[in-house]
Image (cartoon, rainbow, N blue to C red; front, side, top):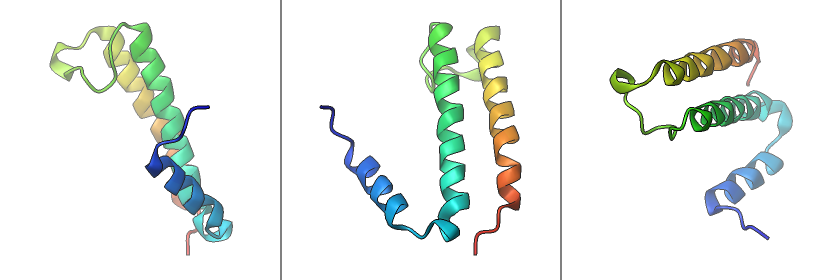
Length: 87
């Protein structure tokens, strides 16, 4: 069994213990951000690169397309969350 990183365990525990009505917007934000980053990591992997290690000036068109897709993903998913009330 693979053990979770301590920060991951802490974040999971806090998410489970936090009142969902107050934290729903923040949790949704984190889930959307994680989903977009997983997708861009797969895109980078398919292009033969490692996410976070490529400079924009030396990137191939495929990597630039991955960056554009990540930006579109984050913009599309985060826009509705800006309207989510968080007291």
